[in-house]
Image (cartoon, rainbow, N blue to C red; front, side):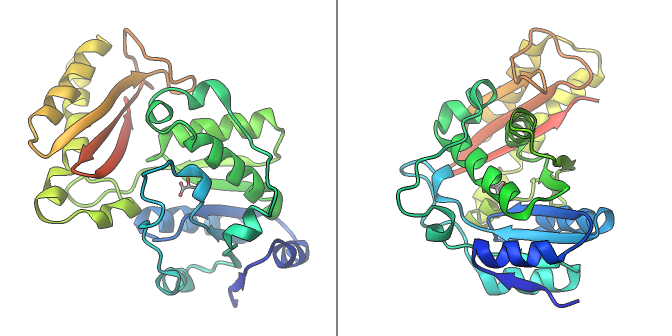
Length: 279
Ligand code: PAF
């Protein structure tokens, strides 16, 4: 099957109508890595057709964030997609996605506020808006997201439910490098000592999980352990550490099976996030 590369909403609609059966969508911002490829393979296994979007969404970046330097290499991305049996790749321009006079936003209120939302105030409004537009354009039966962006998953599930999108949100496990670093397009900003220091996120989560496995249930103790692990890494600075209820993202006093541990850490100018669900 020949993958169709499309640029306009009109072309995407025309092709979508010709595809009978279920479509699985993997929304991406390009700079594809093993995490994205796992979403696409899962969509391929579970759906009749697979769509991938590649769009570096300007509205989810705040002032001073890395929108302009975010890695972009469409040829490489298309090469990586070639063997995966993708039916449609949609690569809209910013003007196609946000036509002149654009003024309609999707804001998912409470679950967008803490954690990432506290540090990136308009981020989830941008994510929810673009994902709603992707759902309208592709009309997928299933949409595939990585657990790595745990809060994004919570926001999108809430949005899909609240706005009656007839789509199943499928959450795929975080894919990690051999040393535990969660795969992310932003890892390409790291090298040398910074790359080594970046394993601190996984180490902090692991240290808290070990305490949980040993019977500790005080959320404050687990948060303190994560903070102490990050503080031990000279190149790292924590934005937040969290032990929260996985659907509402409310901070807990006591942790239990299913609690979401998460953290955001700056390694120099590079901001990384990671999380783990206690089991
Ligand atoms: O996770 C991402 O890459 C982005 O936030 C998404 C879902 C493609 C929306 O731009």
